[in-house]
Amino acid sequence: MSRTLTVALLTAALGAAAPARAQHEDHAAGAQPVEKLGTVNFANSCSNAVGADFNRAVALLHSFEFRPAIDGFDSVLSKDASCAIAYWGIALSYWSNPFAGARSPAALEQGLAAVQKGRTTGSPTARERGFIAAAGALFDNYQTVSQSDRIAAYERGMAEVARANPNDIEAQIFHALAINQTALPADKTYAAQLRAAGILEPLFKQYPDHPGLAHYIIHAIDE
Image (cartoon, rainbow, N blue to C red; front, side, top):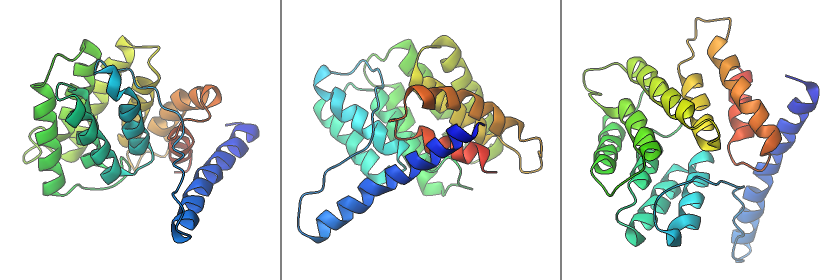
């Protein structure tokens, strides 16, 4: 990675922390905090009326604000009950931090329930079905299939979504995240992390205001 990009990433990370501090200070002073989540444009087939709410919920997901993200996707569904892809967002929010360890049975059960609802709701596009199917791999048969095998299956599913939608920024980002999750601690070549960074770095140069890209690249290179 170039020194320029490294500096940009650190600047972006610090910049992302500043709004959070400002919101805390505004809250302490009794003012209404101004939400600054960055820019997300996740194409979906849901009602136009929920487009902004959906993008906000995805931005919260990228920001690791998982409970608010679930609330955001629930709000989308309250306005458009046929929005199947919102259940994908809920499922990934229950999966939570992609770099964390083992998930609790309760989180896995809730994620699986969200996936199952997504599979049977509305008329999602082929792309949306791909996202839902990939997320399903994280939860299906969690009682009998190891987490590492489920993560590997998730990466394969997201690879298919990314290949089918090469110009879809969110598909590429979530695929890179899936790749990074497959990294093995014993692999000192850091092949998975470097592969993920190779996808994410060009996107960061194009979309520096995205709420997740700088954070994800730092995870990929800081191993």
